[in-house]
Image (tube, rainbow, N blue to C red):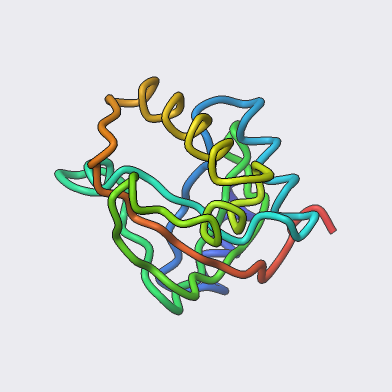
Length: 139
C-alpha cells in the first residue's frame, strides 16, 4: 500500500490525499459513485480546511482518494473550486455530487453529515469542488 502511494505521489507531484465521507460504508458508497461516473463534485465545511485541517482543493491539482483503510482508490483532478453558504448551494451542484435525486435530499443528507462532524448552520460556508476522474486504481 505504501509503495503504491509513493508511486502515485511521484506520478502526481503535489497531490494531496483524502477520504470521502466519515466512515467506511459512506466512503465506499461515494467511491463507487465516482467509479460509476455519477459523482463529479464534493463539498466540505470551510472550517475543516483551516487551522491545520485538510488542504484546500486547487484547480488543476490531481489528488489521491483513499479507501477508508488508507489504500489508494482513485486519482481525481479538481476542475473548479468555489465557496458558498450551505443555504445557497444550487440543485446543479447538489446533483453533481451524485448522492441524491434532488436538492432537498442533498440538504437532508448533508445537514446530517455536518451535524455529525462539527456542527451545522444553514449559513455555514462550504468549499465546493467539481472534479474529474483521472485514474481508477481498481482497474
